[in-house]
Image (tube, rainbow, N blue to C red; front, side, top):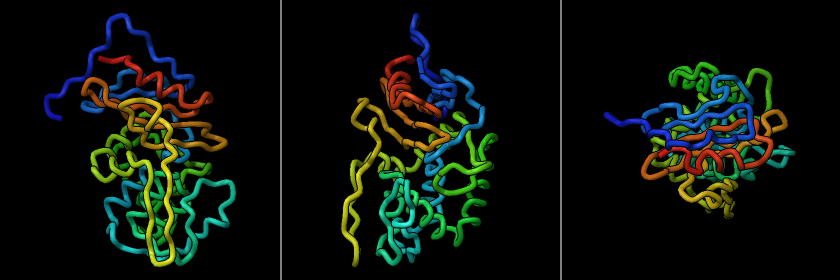
Length: 253
């Protein structure tokens, strides 16, 4: 916002103890970095990739469209899934919830094919959008974030991407939802939100969790403290959600 000022550090407050080698805490109103640890070093983003996939789905999709689904989740072993099968009658809105709530890799592929026509074309769109956002340490190779050579981002780029996404009311609604019910001619079931910080930390808005063998556990979250929005990204956390909780516990005023 015009004229917004970054919060002032509490006198005598200790630095966050993020349990990770890569960490950033950003003021949501101004974009000022409040605390950082290797914020520009590229790391595996895992399912934080899905933030970009959802951004493009919101910007280019028609929510009531019902795309032709050719993704078969039954063939995607060891994967977080929405549960798509070829021919399922789902809307674009259902797919966006499927991307973010259960972190569905199948839903991310389906969104990309709907938006761009092919996996490769969608990845090009993702990288073009990353360049437009000024993300200098980000390169995408797929729409879901499974480990791939040359697929990376940085803590700083992740929070910039998340801060941009949160400007969309629909993105905020999706990430805050506890569940979403999908109803179609041949499908009717409810998908849950796997984001634990929605209930673990009052005022937290856990944008997206992420986990792969390479990325370990790497959440990106937002919260409001005394009316001040803050964003935190902590890739390669090895001790679960302790890092974002510590960061959101009150290191700024």
